[in-house]
Image: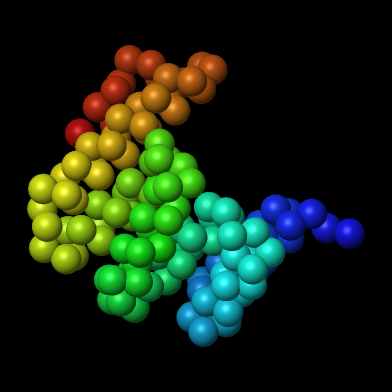
Length: 126
């Protein structure tokens, strides 16, 4: 029998496919199923935030992103999503805060990578 965490991850991956092919309803259904299997599935919360953001349901996007943030407060992707959501909502200071957090945590990940370019901490395009 599949462990709840593995089932949730698999359902979240399947839901991402549905979203990629434009089936938002199937994506959200799959993501809710993933959370039913494992309410602490970070990937599902982050994906829900992205689906709602794409549909411009910013309150729902923010709620899901906040849940993802609670699960992984140092994740680059959740801070990037929160930056985009806050910018779209018109709160530039909060958007900039999360953008800065994403860069900081991204740099930390870059420094952990063996053989990575440790000299370029400005990031891409800077």
